[in-house]
Image (cartoon, rainbow, N blue to C red):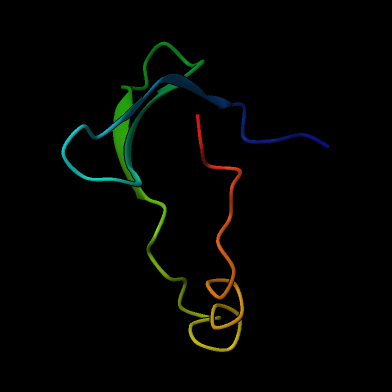
Length: 68
């Protein structure tokens, strides 16, 4: 379908060297008049709609997929 005409893409993604699981995303728009913005992302932040019900079983076993 037809969107609003602005599509957004990630221009830069870098992790915070001082805090684990914190990232800063430099998001830019394809429309030239729009400014790019920086989005802070915390991967450990819990979502509002699924706070304790969804997350209590995920931390029981260690995940080895985050390693280098």
